[in-house]
Image (tube, rainbow, N blue to C red; front, top):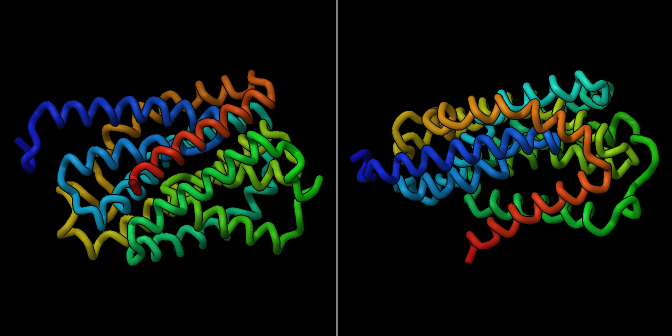
Length: 276
């Protein structure tokens, strides 16, 4: 027994984390996202079994998810860059504002109720899904990316909202780029690049934000990051990420858009039921 949890429950959780890591790694390469949308629900159920208090459970899930996807995003970006589809100018403009957004999100995570972050996840992910399902190019804001100031604001918002969702912001940066007419293959490849600094900064931020709450957190936690969850999930996820990237470049644009929208909608529904 560990913390009142039997060996069967521990093994079941480890298996769920391995499967979640496998799926998240493929999604990271396929859609340019971190796969945190898959990891967070698995972690949430696992931490519930281990009796983590509800007022810090979601924060622990988000912080652990961000830490897990650091190596995933790095491997995904390298695979996409090898295909030559990354837009370097966008990454250069978004990097610093995105990191500032992550810093703000970590401060919010230290004080905001868990429901705030869960609701943010649902609203943002559902909007993105509906755009890809029904709007197509009709919701586009232009054919060229805006100037430096609007781009900086987008970068800040991507870092802020992505970290609050416990993901890399890849889904958000993908929709911004497609709203300005960038092909989804280029948008996904570029999003995998901006995800790297967001996840690194996010992991550090959640570690620091969770330090005052250590008494409520399970053993082997660094702030709002579970070291056990990190060590179980990250290796398998980062291993399979490049395979997802190679597969993404073989898919037609519309198939990729529908798949991306469906993935986000399913995750939104999952978290919506957590309110019921």
